[in-house]
Length: 83
Image (cartoon, rainbow, N blue to C red):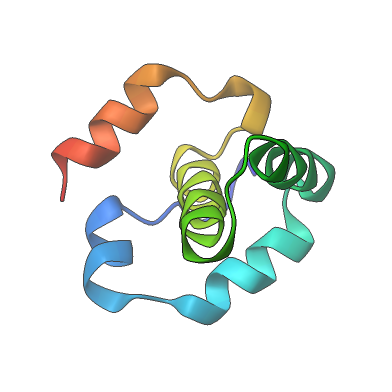
């Protein structure tokens, strides 16, 4: 995602861009996000909990401009601190 617009976490909290998550999931790291969803299902997550987890991963990828495999614990902690 280099060279693209990387929204801040405040954007996601204040704007609540539901459609962006679906579009981004289709365009960015689709295989990795699908793997995350399957792993979440394997671990027993479903419904809103699984959906929230996938949205969080998409949000992190969009914000960092990196890949799912590059996400670090510090990325999650930074996001939590911005709420």
